[in-house]
Image (tube, rainbow, N blue to C red):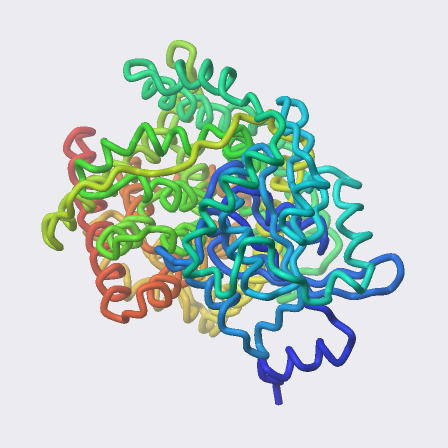
Length: 631
């Protein structure tokens, strides 16, 4: 019997766990501090809205003390405007056993204490023992910020420590304070405040008074930001700069990944050849070579392209450029019925639609939120990249057009196709659901930072780890299951053709072929699309398994790219690319739509319209390309 949340909370208290909640404004470094305290690798970025749900972890100090750390979504006030802010408010105000809070560590951006101070006073007035962590103190000092820490501590009536959460050793002062048990004793509210301070309007005046007293010199952060913004946010040059950055990114995905992909492919071929030599012909060799190596190996080869794509995304996040892109696109998005608030969730969907859809919790207007959720699956997530790369490598010549890689141009076009489709669908849905009054995007633009190598490395490692975990679990299991379905039942005596055609998978594929034949798909593609619903990239491993079992003789040693280039026509390849631009080939995406909207109808509508679009787009692509190519 599994323990309840309440029982877990009581157990932690009985085991000498102390629960610490991290509270603060968005983009103040809470998640970076959480990662440093717990050893976790939660996503951090140089813009607001990354943390949209409560994260929890444990830490143990050198002297053996144990703490339970809760990272709450960023807030600007205790009056919530969005779903993620409501999570923080409930955690702080509804004191329940499943969310025990023994201490609050308020994380404030030291370069912008003015933004935080009123909320600090409101949090202190809740009655929790509280510590103020002045984070990013190194940046504050570099920019000339001078804060009288002793006076600030006297004014607030709580301990104040300096932290640099992104640097090793940058939180020692905080840990030293936590190891002293007296910080968990309830403290007296700050002078001039009264409980409950939620309704005490004097907190605004009190915060201004304290700021004037403790800040001896403000940080000079504007000149550099303004100089860079005058270029990247220029009304004429800003948008072309954004397009150029994205264009270069997709060029690099193909150009830079070519050599490491060849190394991985050579290694996989070598492993397959060795097992073919070592194992006698039979079921075991077929399972390992045709099922596991052919299925899993066909996916692993695309890891370099995925890492290169995320390398650029992480640099743009770390530098502070991405929120500027949202600012630039605000008016453009308003013309299709959305605000710039939708940009960050849609951008997150390029990594994976699941966190992108969850990030819509930061959108205040429900209609905007629903539309953003419905178009998020059209953003080209990283799981589509193996499918695109396989087909592009098989059918698009590896040549240059001027100074550009032709395969990179095609990949860029596929990403743009998804974006344009999302724009069109958003425009239609905004008219059907009723157009809102334009609400300008209000977002604090962070200061520019040089990307930190450690954060980039951690981000890439996490992406590689997630990819390899999927390969070793879901994709591995699916490849084995597909091998079983593609091998049994065995063909009758005297049967002609490949054994897979008599198997369960082969029979199912031939039935489905009647449905997909009008869009140019064969039965092998039809079979691969079914396990691909677990995760889009599984379609590639499924094709590897199916074609390995379909091949015979010398064809067994030919790479999947060569097999499909000889088996498919160009219209079929283009039709499959069109399918993957639109099709919701991911159960997890449909599941999170159901959870975030609390509506089976919305999930069903999303699945129906996306599959309908995919079929129509593939149908049009197949027949138009056949007409143009004369085949």
